Image (cartoon, rainbow, N blue to C red; front, side, top):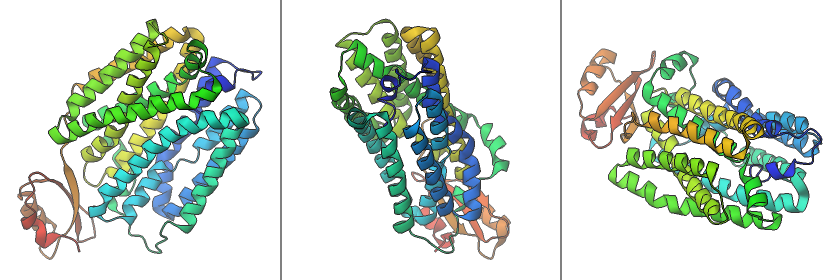
Length: 422
């Protein structure tokens, strides 16, 4: 809700500058990036619910500080406090803990859909609330939403006394260095970094473009964002369907990154009453498609047993992108002007396009929990590794369980049936 209105709401602050505007947008992401993995580790030790509720309380505190702030520096502090409620990876881990393997993909799809819907809804509600109650009204609304979030977790989320954490969700600092060396994961981490850098940097300028260059008045901002975001969401659906149905993930991905690069470059040297809305619609279409594709691609590319750590690194990269997007966007606007800002964004996206050239389309992998049985680890590994479709095996020390990654198109499930964990 802050993104579409912040740039046009803080011009009257005594210490306003484009750089501080960028820091206000990005401070949230910096603290989120720093705390994602530590909060994930903490939730492995003390449980998911205390970490989630504690994170929401910090988010509420930051929202109140922002609502009462009268300077840009106060807003930066409040945004940093909001960001300290870094519970995204912990929430995903809780979902994995509380769902069976058979239902997990559906649960993650529902969460992904709700995130996409909430993004579009926020872009509509932000201008409406700001128009009637000012910027402080937006932050009071986020505080209320934080309270509702606590009530939902407290009253509606199942509270299992003894949760057997799924090995796939646990964060292990020993895995971080090894995962950072994996090229395919690095490409995906840079991808989410670049995508959110581009988004936040663009929103340093987009509200001003709409209000000053296109003459969109405050009471009309909400439906302009609805058309841009909602239209982009609808237009991107055929691309998602084609990628899944015909396994053209890489082609659609490269095309989307290339389109975002071209759009931002065009916005740097030509904008007009017709061209600008069209370019922004194309920008948000490509953004929605990439935002929906990257988490699924990352999940399918994670080594068996390392998903919790890999997703923690992924979330950290995403929020670091948001921070540097705000910082770089504010600096570029202050130093290079509006045109220079979009040139910088296009350069970041062009580098991402080059990085994407080496990517491979994700395989339809699935992780199964198998029982080792009385034959022992060595015999189990020898037998299971020779079954068609088995790609990776993780044996747990001191346990009779194994995490086995299989290719759903090739796996011989009848041979694995005797080992399935009931």
